[in-house]
Length: 170
Image 1: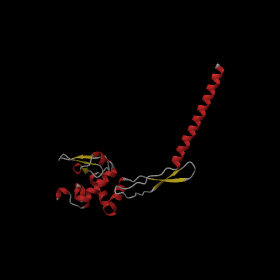
Image 2: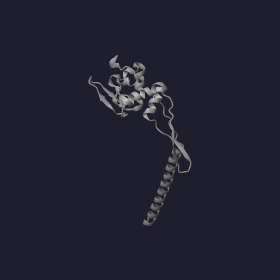
Image 3: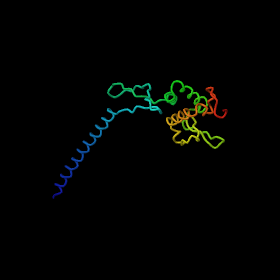
Image 4: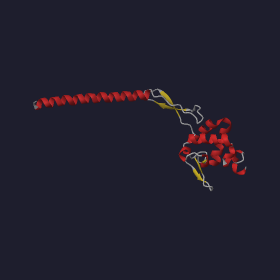
């Protein structure tokens, strides 16, 4: 085979590779665009399994049409949703005015008895939850609601802010 022939074959091979790469790039772009356009949104649910609703924000899309996208719920909204219309405001008051004024999901308080309180509702370690679980806002709210169902408001030392007697005074 002559050098000229080898050069022509290599050039044809390079052109074929370029063509296939172009087709592959177009395919990836098409698949990506299709996935974006037809993406399904996951509906958020409360710790009790109820669907969550939230006001939408408006965003402009390249095509000129306007689409809305849901905003994530605030911690206060999550508490209200999980605890309901009656107890939700009381739970928020305990958290925001006493237990965790900074609304810090990573808050930890070490107690003199060797236990510690963690997360939004400052869940005490005696309840058996791991710190990692209680750093998760939704899990912390769910755990707090279960503790409330078992023990009522006295389980929180700050229950006095809603005129309930805390456990240490019972």
